[in-house]
Figure 1 (tube, rainbow, N blue to C red):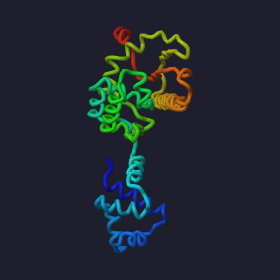
Figure 2: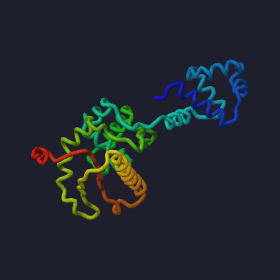
Figure 3: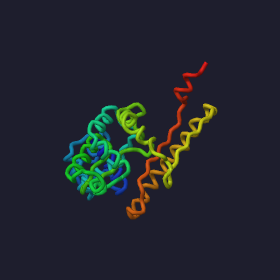
Figure 4: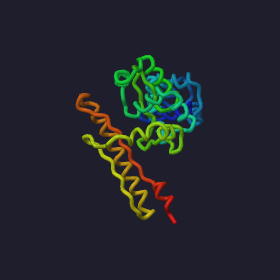
Length: 243
């Protein structure tokens, strides 16, 4: 939830946009200009006063709250507790993966065995966890940055290591648009981060294409999972043969 200080900061911005001076606002509120300046400088006031300022600005409080939410910094990573909450329920984990792909509630319930009531319940849970901001008509806004990643050794990645990796690599990678590359080499440690940046750009390109293609008919789209990885590693069987 946004703090009162966040709301006050947003109000100051709205006052500037509306070109309303402190004197103008003081007159609208029936207060002394010095009192208005002091109130906004402290950044601390009751919600009733914020509501009165909204009326003076002809601004709906809900719109103000939404603008405050939109201005909040996006999460690059969840906490351990947030991730534990996600993996505690398989259906909630499914919904989390779906919202990361920007699926609508209708897409989720049409594709998976979830009722609309269950879908709404899980969207509400993701809102409480902090992954999305749930909006009217079951729409939502992701609160995750483009560089978001699951914690490398957190509950979600551990879950996928235990339950998904073997299933993923059991595929033949020989279908249309499929492939797997295994490249080994020794490179400068200073260059390794540059390769990671390129991989991140590929992942972002894939995510952006997914969003752009949502306007296409479903029959023209296919679900793919892109896995990019790079680490300092040696196959255990080879490491065991080292002198």
